[in-house]
Length: 304
Image 1 (cartoon, rainbow, N blue to C red):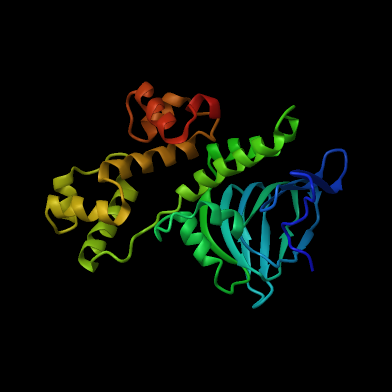
Image 2: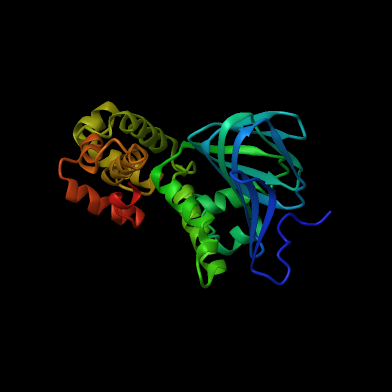
């Protein structure tokens, strides 16, 4: 059985039509060795299944714009369902699994497969780095495991659209596509909330308690003294513990949560950018746009 990834031969970019009608398609695209994606657009779908014959260790990122699908673990027959408006990360290591697209009037799904030897290029040797965490995860003997689920955001839709349409580029479409895939990986992996669990237990619990409170109050967050009181500690220890565990300041984490929420709200074409800014706690639209660009490299108006 050949590797899932070594199918491009002498070409750096290979597009294979698996299924096609006038308004439907399932396309597999191999980008060099180590990256494969499926672009799936179906109408009036009954049910379609793909058996992934997997000799490799891989990370799989899925984006479900419409419809749904399930992944069947062929070792224990457990089922993981991915629904509309979700983006998920799976890990698999040298085990076959089955991907089944569920019946739907409209199905639009993007599935990205990334080989471990591709991830290996970017290891930092820091266990709290997302790529290192995922790489180590697929060294275990697992069929398929759901690692993370997030709501589908505007930036993910934008980048996936660039990946799928890369072939329309007149020149260098192979390297452009790989660049867009890496951009998507950076964005999606950055949404993983990595926690350094080697930290002292007391500091870890303080930081986790602070994060739990901020997750529900980031639009109007408490002051540092109030947050320290909530966490039953002093301001100095709170700030020190939070920075050690999450590798960012409390202010930086609040900003991250606000911009992630804004990225979700930008999917709603009924909301203007000023309304999105106010919804996440910024009264000045220009300042919000500046922060958004600094975090994501694109202005909110370009996602609208």
